[in-house]
Image: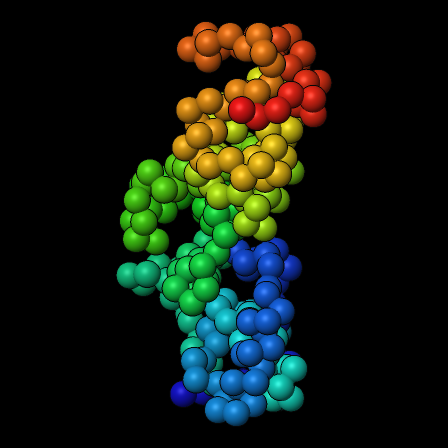
Length: 232
């Protein structure tokens, strides 16, 4: 297996579908590499001045911190079934590696799927190439319709993506209300099933039946009541 000097391998800002790197996992990987070396090679692809990293950014960071100057690599020139190894094909490999080695957050998956979709892949193609269901791809893409505050809450594990379908619908009417309800979910540990059944319960003693959807004016008026009415 070929080896490359680490200074020949460049990362690309914004390419890696993983946005956050856990410090504890990083420190453990550094210790492992110091003790046993690199057990899994980096995946790279040639460019005009060296190589771009495709898979293994956590390992690359740990190698550098552990004091290594080179590493074994797999050099990719072609994508699946002989396709050109363009950035979309590289992204598919990066998503696959991250999903197998350490789960991406739901928001990271959503952003990665959106990048593939922008690159010309259909929902069906994304699902087939990543061995996931079309339903999962559609659900993840819907997460990007949420306000940034709620996306951060999902990314950091304060709430799960199970709350998202209801929050997406509420956010279409009022993003402020959706964010306020997210805060309430976190503070009062409301389950996803309870929230889906009665998403606005407790916002007002005069709350109408949720089978009749809200007008913008009504929802905006309820937003101001979030801090003052208890969740039953």
